[in-house]
Length: 331
Ligand code: HPA
Ligand code: ZN
Image 1 (tube, rainbow, N blue to C red):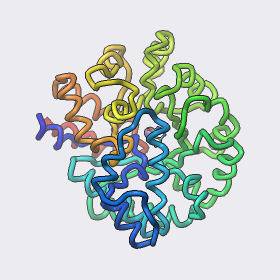
Image 2 (tube, protein in one colour; image 1 turned 90 degrees about the vertical axis):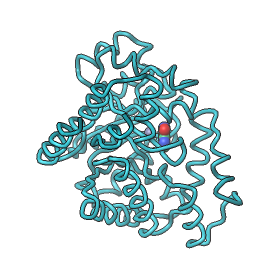
Image 3 (cartoon, rainbow, N blue to C red; image 1 turned 90 degrees about the horizontal axis):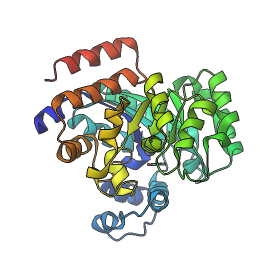
């Protein structure tokens, strides 16, 4: 089973590239840039990653990314992740990035985009790994700030595969970002949003109705609203589920308690993802392996999940056909 899960061509649709920053790279970038860290060692960093909820994680996540200053840093961050992911059998990565968290530290969009795009080209050439870019807005910051980031990103609109919405969910409903998402829609940029991770099922409904998103990130709390579950099934809305993230952020107590089997039984279209692999105890393969341990799923279930990710990915039809072919040979 483990060999099969490694070989399975996995497309990752929900990853925060800043959340792929391993403590080792954090230390080496801190040294390169003369940034001081509140940790004495790599072990101390890992010990600090004991979260009680989403906010307690976000505090360390924003602190950790303070070592990212130059285009080279963003390149090294992404390339480091792409290499690890490829070794786990990942064939495609859709990465969220958080411009506002960098702009606040004086690091501009040109620096971020130069570094990430260079890494994407290297990954394509050297690893045969395709990727997509999702520019995320921080929902706990004012909507006006998100709108200004979207306008500032004009030189890059064509490179964005989607915009997304992340950070602290409770009290920051999708409705807050109606104008920003309407602007993205008119620009022809696809839209996704985190909803129903810590926030209520109603936020999922709002993301669909008010933000016109094509996928929901997380969405696990939809089960609290049976009518919403029926709608998600009927409309074929894809949920990008992050099992180890949900355990680490105490959305569920143990993976065995995770709603994944219920979501599958309800006929929903699901994908498995790592979210913030450096913070939540592992990448794509660790998430797939944890699910086989917790739920005892057959190969067919994993093939179904991997297939949904290929169908819902922001890729060319040519690349989709290639990944379908790879999946058909994965047994
Ligand atoms: N949830 C919300 N915002 C985030 C996350 C997450 O898991 N990771 C990075 N930003
Ligand atoms: Zn996320």
